[in-house]
Image (cartoon, rainbow, N blue to C red):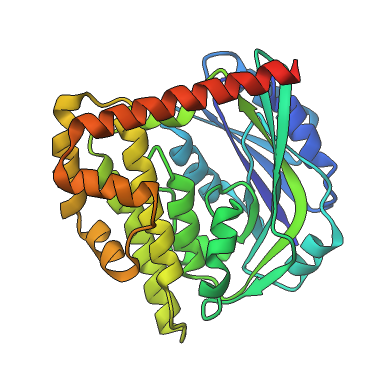
Length: 347
């Protein structure tokens, strides 16, 4: 059984060797490492070539800069393994346990595992956080709704780098990352893949170490660059719809869990967008939000979560731009204060 590790590379020469070294000792004898250099300008491309010269299992592929989704799609086209695993170039893996190996040897279509997030500020360690399920979960499309929220809120579905995927599912169904998305593109891809899977296994073992730089407010910055936020979120919603249809076709019944998670994504992204939106534009976003077909479907099916979400939805319906503006700015200040207090106590 051959594994293809796909690493999109962009201006990361300081971290790439450690990432590659970690993969070489995770426990696989038959594997390849694909380094997809996405037009790096810091010398990362030369590091890729040097690594490929030293290790026969490494291949370096170079392309003009097109973004992480395009780099991963190139990796899918180049891969030769039975399974693929996407790895970010500044992260590392730890050796896989018998549970993961057994699931792969059994031919499971998708095998998911836990993650450890390590937070840094100015290259100084601040804290770590582990996200993992508390027991092994085996599911198929019919039973997936029963564990969907658990997997979603333990962050097993949103990233793409914590799961082995049978490559034939991607090639036979022409599944690729959507280059139009710059946020939740991993989740959209994962849901599309799940809609074609006959079996999945999620294990509690932590095998992926994800580096988080506190100095970059990545989510807010990404969302600020998206002008048509609802249009982009609707693309993500379509992957939910496709998965729901596959579940129903397989005999699954209650798919409310998917609608709850999708509803919460809409509210989350709306709140983040408001952090960088002027008062004068908020009313337009409010009208677009309440008229969005996917939002309407979710609200009609599973309602609104009591508390802050319910309050925000009422303000959106009433187009209370000033209240929304003040609330999101207050949330930003509170988040900023809490984050810095944590740093102070860690130091």
